[in-house]
Amino acid sequence: MKEKLLNPLKRNALKEIIGGSGSIPGYQVCMIIADDDGHIIDDKVCPARTCCNSNNECVPLRLNQC
Image (cartoon, rainbow, N blue to C red; front, side, top):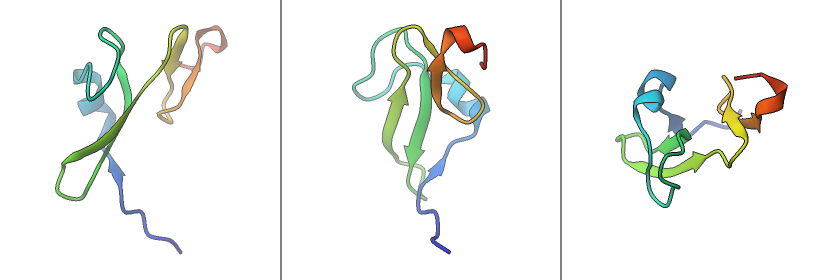
């Protein structure tokens, strides 16, 4: 099996973080990818009219999955 090298932060921590590197002001970060030492490598911000579901995926608001 392939080992996971990147561990996403817990959702509770994600809810407190707005913004991030290269993100759009006012949009909540959906997923943050960090290395084992906790340094943020990348983040993902959902575009307009989408939201972040429990799987850290951006889905359309009309699907009511968030």
